[in-house]
Length: 96
Image (cartoon, rainbow, N blue to C red; front, side, top):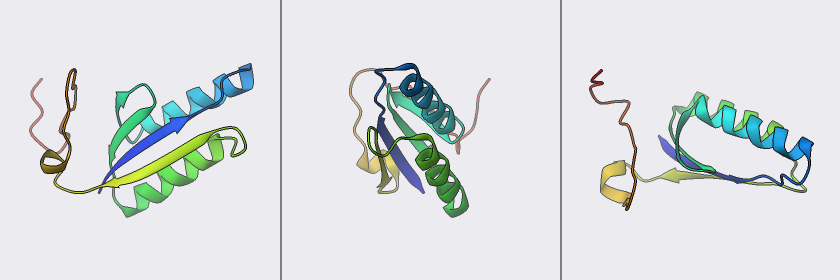
């Protein structure tokens, strides 16, 4: 399944900046950054549970916001992108 992860972490102090780095690091492990605080991830059900659990453990629920949206598949049919789009289809052939 394809999901979109969006987050807003309060970074007014060092602890908040650390949380922000942790959230981004978790997201990088599951998908690709499409904007500063937005990631597109292609995961199965187990990976989705792991992603959700790890992200919720990183944030401060009183200060931060985390949203996970399930994208309608196929992505190419339902997502429009304008401007820079560095999307990489990891399911397609990879040319090095």
